[in-house]
Length: 234
Image (cartoon, rainbow, N blue to C red; front, side, top):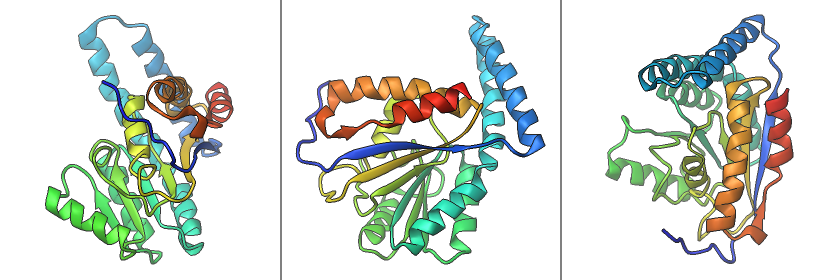
């Protein structure tokens, strides 16, 4: 299905925030994560692959928890600079932790995820964000990925990633859509050597293809390529 090109929008720039695995328990977790991911890639049985993916998702959630302090620091820095911020994550537990900790530093927070909002309540929160009554929205990639307008934010942080690059592209475009007047900065937070870093390298390739098919390529600043390729190779 063809989509109208986004002519006339400010540029969208993607960058990676690369974190080193300094904590010994995180190093061990990454080793386990990669071993299970290797078993997934080497298994063709669909039932086994599903079981392995369940284990892998649980490990990715634990890995994501190590990003929370860095994500909170990043958000608070933007908040103190007067920037409204849109934060995306995948697991509800991570969304809840991010929102609770960020709000303790002063910003007015709204959470958007599948189990928390009726359509009416969700739209009310978005309207409040757009009106400047809410400083930070922490949202689920799938729950807030389509049909919503949050153009007040020009700074968008992904603390977790989705396997589907089109889900990420849709989430990015909650801010980068008609009504946006500023360049939009998309930040992917990844831990070197993690599965998220590997996914980034795959996602970047697919997003480039998606931009060529659906987007206005002349307006897209895809610097994420080199950044994320280095993160995946680390």
